[in-house]
Amino acid sequence: MHKEVLRAIEGIGLYPVISLIVFFLFFTSVFLWVVRIRKSHAKSMAAMPLDDGDTPEPLSTPSSPPTTSRS
Image 1 (cartoon, rainbow, N blue to C red):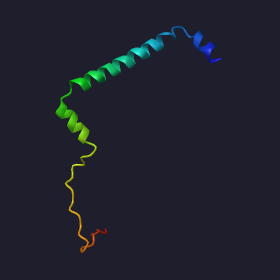
Image 2 (cartoon, one colour):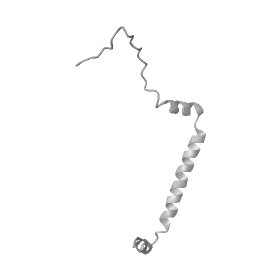
Image 3 (spheres, helix red, strand yellow):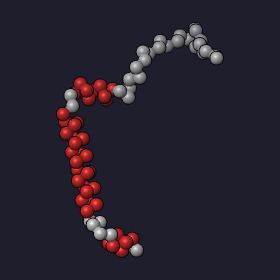
Image 4 (cartoon, rainbow, N blue to C red):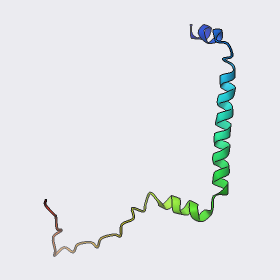
């Protein structure tokens, strides 16, 4: 049933071609962008998930209990 409906639409064969062209252009542009970026920029982007921007707090010693703030 679906095949007959799709066959009845005029110009339906154009949509797969357009999809292929969009797919090819997108991945070609991403590939060219990856090839052209500086290595320092790529390294800084790779470290972003691990860098939260805060300095690490010192670990508490066993003799002093951790402090909690209650509001």
